[in-house]
Length: 280
Ligand code: ADP
Image (cartoon, rainbow, N blue to C red; front, side, top):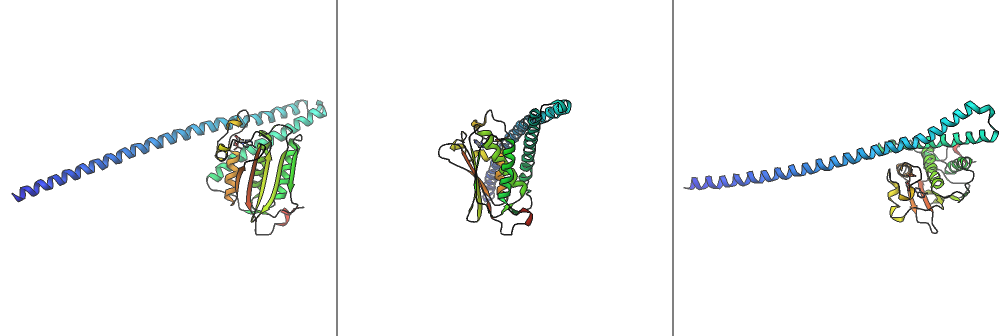
């Protein structure tokens, strides 16, 4: 009698365990299925984003390449017979589009590099020299754009590398150029703030809606205000990642009276400036 009772109890226990195991297995299978579905959706989204990005890249690269080839052909065929002004205009187009092409390619490469955590060796960099150099370029390419500059003659060096700082500043200036109406001034300033240098680029364009102030730093994000303006949506993401790799940051401050006020900071370098980078 006791043996029969024990068997019954044991059988019930085993059944319960089997049922619990089945339920646990089913739960695990459901979770697995859910995860596979999510991963598939993520992968599809990533593939869609990749396709869109490739389409955007080819479109963006094609324009400067066509202008460059068109002008080379023109200079090659008619170079000797072209009026001086036409020749100069063709050369300006060549330089501007060549530079735009280089910045596009550098942004794509920089995004890929920082994605894998590869940054250039940090060195002391003269912010003043890079600002002057970039403004000089900008003025040569867009002479109609008034630029107001405000920074002390002696800005101490920061931790970065020349290439990254040029790209960051070049991207912010290019955006100020693209997104603000012709003739409206762009204001560039730099100042020391505690242990860092803060550089600001302010334009008088339509600005960015406040709710998008963070999102515009995400790769491939383009605001509604950008429709009709060329771009790949990676310039600000590259700025953010490059600056963060050197302990800096970038932000968009609200600006009274409209326009965009982009600023970035980089830590001051403790080492002395290397001689060939010294400010004049
Ligand atoms: P892109 O300009 O190629 O679209 P960015 O990453 O440089 O890519 O900028 C992301 C988005 O931020 C732009 O599409 C635009 O909507 C907005 N933006 C950037 N700079 C400005 C600016 N100076 N004024 C207004 N909107 C801007």
